[in-house]
Image: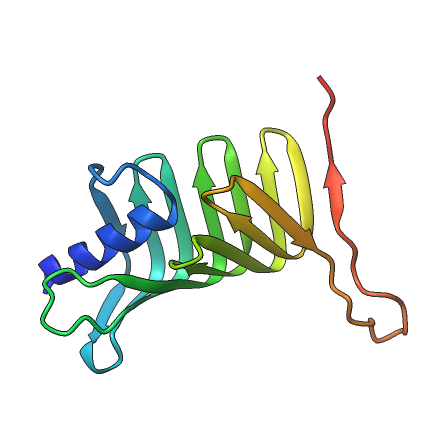
Length: 162
């Protein structure tokens, strides 16, 4: 069981954050449940996942893998983190209430008061997309009207000049 978990996470988180595949993956959580019928592994309670200089913290992390019946190591389809999500890599830090990683697109989506810092610079919005292979991000404001009829939230950035 632990070999399967390590294999799934090595192929998933390692690819998700473009860390070196040789670095070991360390995961701590209060609980882990493997659901072979739905091809998922659920980590819950103070989840702390690390590989190289990448760290992901959340209340809950679900690893969804592709149905590669009979394979020892399965390929990750997506990774979903919910609740108090924080992802760090070097001097970059992103936070939100949910993070989805789409393996085929190599794209991270952070939603729910998404914020990212690089050094002292900050960008915030409702949703943030980060494209790992391209090294680019897009931030979107919330286009929904507030209860008082005002416009939705906008993208906000604070840039600290040198």
